[in-house]
Length: 81
Image (cartoon, rainbow, N blue to C red; front, side, top):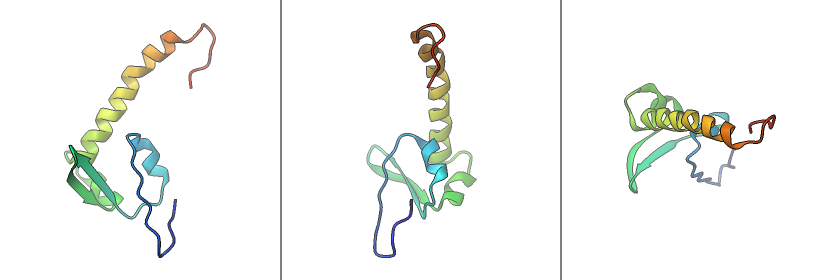
């Protein structure tokens, strides 16, 4: 996703995995409506204890925890999404 020189694109997502495929200038992390971290992608991923990385780990854990429940809810032989 790339905006023109005179455009700004604001993307709001809870799916952090989607961000890695995009060419972003800045990531802003909000918590309860307040900015808790901001910077270029390299800056926000550099600190493993920063809000962005904690959120990434929590999101990944949620996906892993949801997978068994999803697998059990599908009919036998159905492919998981």
